[in-house]
Amino acid sequence: MANAKHKKMTPAMIAYEQVAKRREPGRPVLRNTVLAFLIGGGICLIGQFVEQFYITVFHMTRAAAANPTVATLIFFSALLTGLGLYDRLAQWGGAGTSVPVTGFSNAVTSAAIEHRSEGLIAGTSSNMFKIAGPVIVFGVVAAFAVALVRILIFK
Image (cartoon, rainbow, N blue to C red):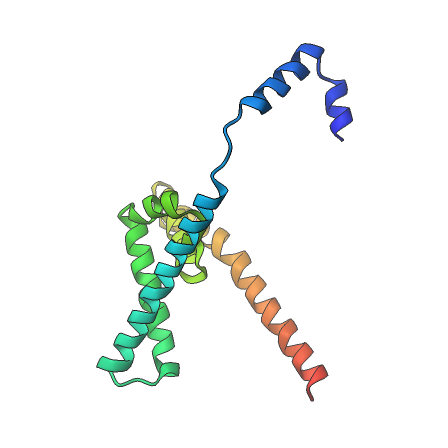
């Protein structure tokens, strides 16, 4: 494939490509990794505080506090996305902000906000489900596959 690409290029284009590759700035992989770890860990730590809040204040069991904790994280992620703060955090923290619940909430909310000018149904709702649909389908199929394997192997 690379050879086919180079066959269409002139010698000047090939030389330019080589110069451009040499001058391309390096990516700060270690810095990005550390920031992603800290931001993702911070989000998870906030989740732990929220869960402990529900356990302490409302006298819930750990299992009972799980659902309100997730709902709270989804709410605040959507709120921060709507205010434009989650995107700033994502620019700084990178992949750390894609912690499953908050990252998914950010993706769905962003799609809804981006297409709100097209109307409630054709814009906001349909574009939200373009993001949410594949994730939900994959989750259901994966859960079915895991349950099937568990049933077949661990009768």
